[in-house]
Image 1 (cartoon, rainbow, N blue to C red):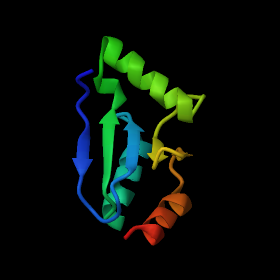
Image 2 (cartoon, helix red, strand yellow):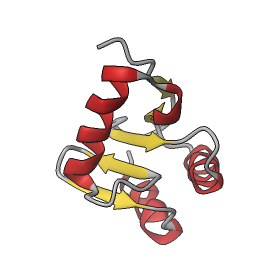
Image 3 (spheres, rainbow, N blue to C red):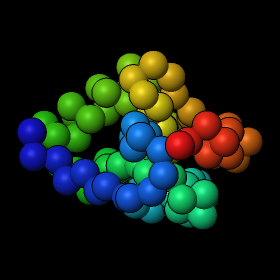
Length: 97
């Protein structure tokens, strides 16, 4: 799979992965908040993928978020934040090193 994942440098372990859409206002707000908080994260804009890559990524999204909505942030490999949840995202910054 040759999915273009973008990494953003910042504080923390970088174990935040965001499934986003390039056209989604809530995804843009989530990226802006993560940037404002200075958190390290990676993301993929799912709508820019095609074919098998998109299908595979959507299967990954569904594991964390059965409704397959965006944004979906996976933290660590053990929990997810679905949608733009400023309070929960700010809590991530409180625990970042």
